Length: 119
Image (cartoon, rainbow, N blue to C red; front, side, top):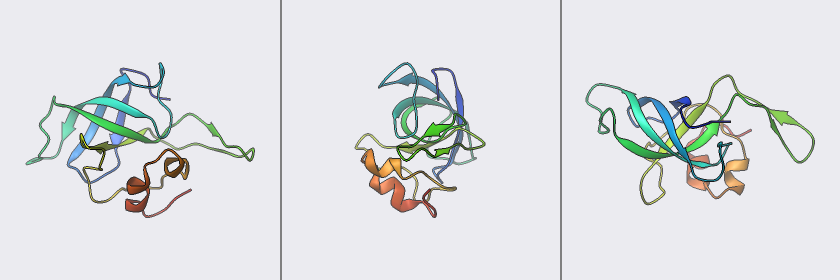
């Protein structure tokens, strides 16, 4: 779960390293597949996105254990997000690390296709 004020790593190659959640659109917290509003805290040199700018992101991985419909559960070592543009397309061209197949059900098929593995 990501609450407003939570920090997360960025799992795409957009040039942004660390972001801070400032708003969750669906509830008080965000789970995998939810849209959040973030402020950029740490970037690579010569990045297109300046430090301190506000962007939107999709939650890809969370530390909190997530239950699935078949009774299994999955959790990750860190919270990570992927930045998206205003039109809803991913900013990066690659997604590092695995993503869960619940992203496909949430309508983020472009993000799933950029990943190298789907759990």
